[in-house]
Image (cartoon, rainbow, N blue to C red; front, side, top):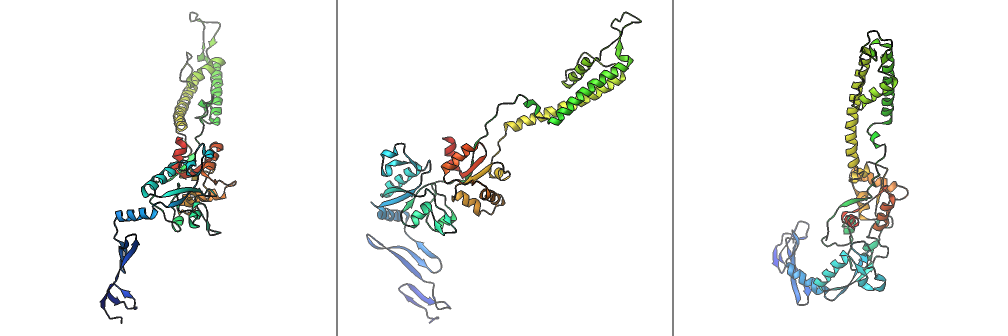
Length: 387
């Protein structure tokens, strides 16, 4: 029988070496209102190949859904689904508004079906509990056939695709960080001291006093710093020294501020000390100016969180995501070392950094005063920020 080959109603009949039929084609027939119609073909080498056109498919879908009422499950998540302000006076579909509500309304007009909204009892999107082997949220509503369709900002994940079918996504997005911007503090009265450390300022003050006293002492001992107050006398009885203690302090502070003074050293010893002080002040003023420019630039550009990597590099700012959501699952299942480290940080944080809803996450960000960041879908964050 394995070597027999003949032609039958389904084409050539022949068998492989194991005795199974090979190289044959089957027609896929579908029962419609107009009777049996060919929908496609199947062969052992290429599998299924539907031959219906897009128009035929569209027509069939419309016929199936015509005047049917579908139960649509969703959750309250702005701006996709929200209750109207006067929702307590409304019933049924009229109490909801949002992008997802408008979207399903337009689809129903095109396909000709009716619908009624049903909120997921637990208000969750749908996550798989690996311990109980059960789903929650909107996915559970679909699996237990309490709803026909789910529409929301529901992320397509591998786990969810194993149990339900998704349409083409109506929006593509990524994960962003919701973080409260630091409140800019008014400039401190002594902020000009910031470019240099306290130790450096103390050393400078000590050097200033030490050089001033040294100039005063050297000027007292050097005869070249003593002059007659009256130049007309050849042998004056009274001599003056310009480097008094106050003048010495004035000379050194004038040099430090690069303003100079009317006092000029005459003796070799005082000139040597003055020269070394001038060189010291040149170095310190140059360093201060450079540090001040860098300090002001950093202060103007200060933004502690720019990406997920910035969060991973620190531990001061706590961060979390929606408990059981797709964002948390992304970090949990990621093979990237940075994201694995972030997941370990979130999982071990006490108290828990996970939120039961995006609304709770937003409130924690506002209450945290810069100490908490929330990870969620970028479009939702954009809506929250621009609102």
